[in-house]
Length: 567
Image 1: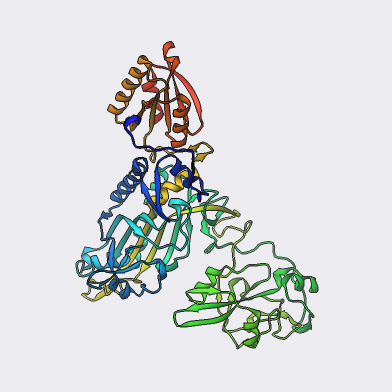
Image 2: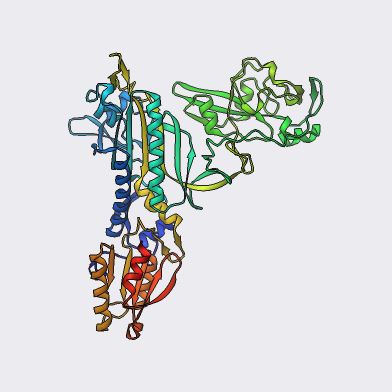
């Protein structure tokens, strides 16, 4: 491609609402343009990057045995009603009626459509396993689209779905897809972590996210400093605590504690470590058929992780509760405890199991119990409720957990029969009996990967594309096209690289050298060959975008020098 003929509208101005580097540079460098809130056009450079990423995904999916399909973007709402998700998904699911008043949705994800494609077409265990995927435009009506391609309403996604006869085969495919996703991100040149995650609205179990490490990431992840363990903070686990403080010694009793309503005040009052106090967090849990106040109990030095709380209570959502609401239920804010608590349900963190010598609320104003032994609560429900902290022990090794910011670019689930059962998608097993498919699903944000690459690879001058993602690997820049020798050499090198199969662009514009150089840095070509005045002495320069280092090489050796760098 010749720059003089290319549609690459670079600009000095960033979008007024742009905050992230990817939003700023993709717009300024002529990769994308905004149509409306959360809607973007891909210009030629942006489309090339998108295609590069799609090609890597397609190659790895083909190598793993997955088959590509292309499902309708418009989905009959009846399918979503069958699965039970049409109301659960909320306003993000865009609904509309056609001229015959049939209800449709714009697909934000395609579980229902893929199950519908397979049911009644795959009827025997002999046809399994099966892995189908697509790379498709999706639409999610985000309430607050922002950050450019990072959180748009319309986006390009790779979504795959596997069908199995049993859980064991699903486990095998899940591991294979995790390995394939790792290879994709490695080939794209991205630093990432595979982390344990919450399944969210998709459902199922065995959920893992692929996170590109970037300071601008929306997600906080806990990663080990010694092994590959990583988890979203919503799902992070920790090892058992090793440095347990000395336990207080007290017989079970009730103490007057006037005005002591916080863990800090309680620990100070009894002169004990907060580890031996019991924290009570009251929340309102939202269910399909209503809501209910639930009390969550943890050790005093822990914090409640709300997603874990929602999962523990098998609820849809969680909300705060006012002291007035608690009082109306007959509870005593600041002094709530688990003993003789029969007014609302209680859930206990696993860290409290078999705990002794605890101090907790006595369900009476200005009173606490001491010397509490948790074994007296015979039917207590114990679940992971704590939020893992920096410095906690890794659950898999002797390392420590640290927080990093990440951008979610992939999410894989073991769905089980979450969708095949309600949609009655079944096959005949070896005994001739009908069973629902055991399913997995594997998503990757293709357009989000464009933004994630820039977030991880940029500087104050612009984008720094990796080898597999770059719109062009080499930019041959003719400093002064009025200089016939420069132009001829630039043309010759351009043709030679192009013939060798290198993705190359020739900057033959009638612009100043400084203007061209700023564009090259803004766009982020991995290598720029500067054909300038030094050509008179038989030399040209190669600029590596990642480091901005300039290397002077002879004009005769520049082709070989570039090819060596691209190996």
